[in-house]
Length: 130
Image 1 (tube, helix red, strand yellow):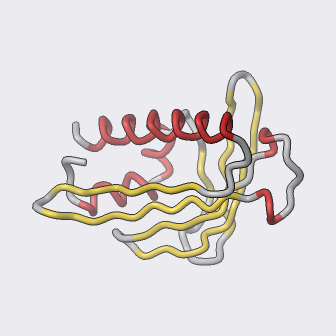
Image 2 (image 1 turned 90 degrees about the horizontal axis):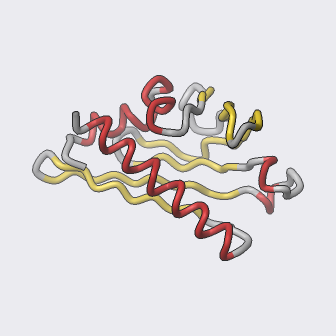
């Protein structure tokens, strides 16, 4: 991203910015290690409340959370949660964002997830590079 890491980090952790680039999602957390995290909104006409926990957070470097969505159709138990890990590094005022998500059960789910993350990251890039 053509922006310093501080600006990218703010976009990752500022609920007002998240709502703009992340499908209108409202995020609720205190951004501390071990804290609960909820995402609420409407997706394809359905209300949702997804959730997780912040596993680790290092400002401007790392944001690791778990993630579960009832819309997945899977039971709410630990083995059905994903790890979502954002890693940031800056060089010459530009930030590299590495995003990984694990525990995706099917190839169809993986493709859907990749498509969504691509849209989210492009929306974020457009927002912070204005």
